[in-house]
Length: 439
Image 1: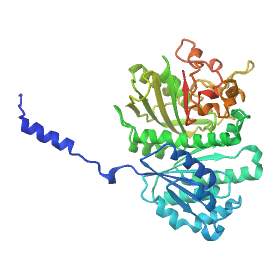
Image 2: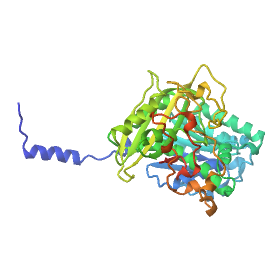
Image 3: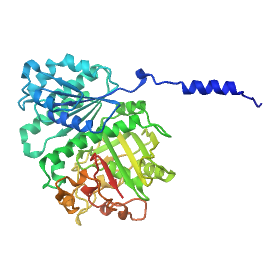
Image 4: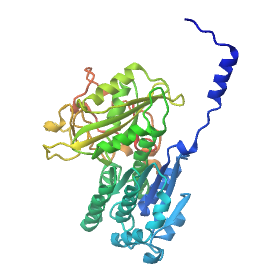
């Protein structure tokens, strides 16, 4: 039966829709706290992103570092323990400082729906104090994602032991922990770059990891992946892989996923089965082919029990031929562990792919092994060869022309064998470094 609706009814319904207002109490509250010098530097980098929906904080034992920070919220910890002079490269002092200031730390993180903790492992303040903050958050039922850097080998075995111990403590209280390797940063960039620029890369990788998660939370599109999806994701996994990348060309969907999962600076799980995958696709024009290529690629990670929500967002500010993919994989360690280095030279003429590098549905090796693997061994001179390093700025901090390396490697089958992948050209990195581009 046809029912006629008069103009007054339509007007009343329209007014009801248009009068809807957001309830601030129902908005997701995200807080990021940088612990110690390294964490403070990462937050300073986040400040450049002008994030409006995130509360940024830094905490330190050194007053001088706090004065240097641009963060809107600065917390001095261990005022009695350190008198504002810092922890003296002693993580035990940093721990006592955090314990002394538990009340003020609790006050600043309460009310968060999700907390990010960022710090450098091995230093005086951040190493153990970060786990104290994570413990406080856990006691308050606040989900926590920790994004930390590990020291380079030349900092010595004692700092390495401190770092490993701090990471172990932090993992006990964090829902998700992402590790950035300073050793890999120093090995994979042009050694002629200014030291400050190299350190800035580490800050950008830390920030890029956090932005990948924020992209998922705050992106609104045709198909949404919401905050509750992320919370379930954090609850089911023990190991995690997080990345964001952009790509262009006919195979941009699969290329973007490959790049997102091939950050040479991040320690990725070597032997993991995926329990949950969150994938967000964004572009000015996302096609059915784009979704198919992304889905086919991530299908290799999945088992019959894997949860995999896919979100699609339209962003008219992006170039029409460009696609951005953000992917988060939560998993568990496989029972049968294979001894395999996390990054291997796969373009060597004598190299034979190990079982971990074969296409094995439902498992991950080298953070990637269920799928074709990019060569993560980067020539230290690559950036200089691009002609950008000579200007005094890191080549990957500029926006260079797209190289076309990835597109030219297609073997015509829709997938590429490991030997057909070139070493990632460092000039494909954009700002932040975690957003990588390929033609």
